[in-house]
Length: 211
Figure 1 (spheres, helix red, strand yellow):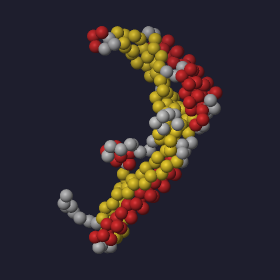
Figure 2: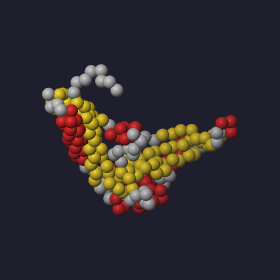
Figure 3: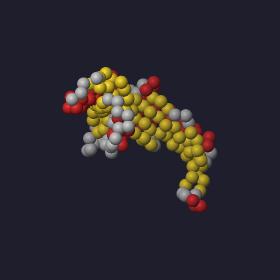
Figure 4: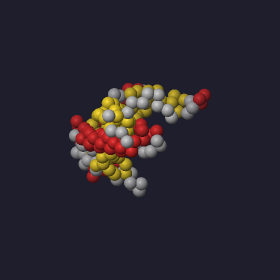
């Protein structure tokens, strides 16, 4: 591939930081269906109060729980011409930050028992994410700089100062390459509730002039 406007040396660098998770975010929902929308709302409200009490009993602070606005939609059964009106569905979604990983499994069981009928996700994360992202970005810059210096040395030229810095989304990059998306935390294959390390990636493209 020809370069229409050669200007210097461009190099890509990607840095990675790993850490053990220190909390989990549990996302779940409450769905209640009734012919009368007011009854669906009342049932969902009661269930919401019960799951809040369940979370408090597990030691989850109120400020670590967020809920969506209550959503009411028409509920149908079946498809096409055979579809029948069932009533109205009331839905409330929640996200709860569980600080102790030891209670995550029990918390899920208690939530379902209290009225949550849909577990959306359980994501393990670290409160040091911002700090580790910064470290990964510094590593990415150093790797890109070292790569550019190697190319310049091999080409017999002197590397000049940086003239271009471009941040790259590593999650999009890895997705395009068909790799596992970066930035998530996974468990073991045998037990998805066993948290693995949180992996935080950063990537950059540096452009250098040739001295």
